[in-house]
Length: 385
Image (tube, rainbow, N blue to C red):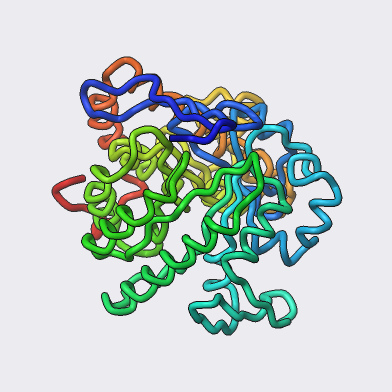
């Protein structure tokens, strides 16, 4: 059962698919799920102000433990009143554990059962993260949802190493759970096990005893074909608790959001919508649109004719192309706003389809649309998709 300051309730289960709409109660507000969470790595969603993130409909954002530890330091954030006050965002915040960055950004790292020794990606200085240190940093940041410190084994590793990383992750989870004492923060365990179904099931069974009001699925969307990710999610679905949200980490393309909800997922996050926006690429109902292309030089139509966001109701493709090609930051801002609005509205439409018991029809229709097929490679396709 969830602890007193947190509660999850199933609002409606789709009769066609079993997908669900829920309400996740946190100290900083109620989140209606399924939900996409914009990523504010360094206590900011890049180029956008907090009021804009709220205006476009975001319910919760994610920040990064590793980066905030590096700059400005968790003690500075704590001194300033915690993340909510520091960045003037008063809805829920989730922080990751920093583990993924420790493994992926460090030029050198040494992994032991005690923790991870690594070099800063900024200046090469030496640091050591333990499960307890990750919890301490997240406690100081003051986020509503915190993540257990885990080892995300690399895609394509052999089963022996995947088993070793999973064993270490489970030991670290016990230490995270024992060390976390701060009231008003919910610790999510993370299911690992690479691409091996039996390891994933083992991880889910062992992790669930530490899940009080939320559980995460990590180590997916790291380069494997999407049908492999969907297979893992199908394998895990029977092992999720029904009375808490399930969070698929690092996933944010439109096709994966819809397919993830279809497989029982409640929460998603990804840097994709803002990162692609800074490169001039927009999600639209007609598929991906590369704004800098010459075809849009004199195109007076909106970025997405089916979208009613601020960007689409005020500016032409021609103007956006001009901003992108001249390096004006407004271009990145406007396309970031649109991309996040698009994903937020997609999830709203998903919730409405579930409430109306027609999510199966929604998925069938969405799979035929260019906004879905634009994000699917031939290697992603298998019978189950």
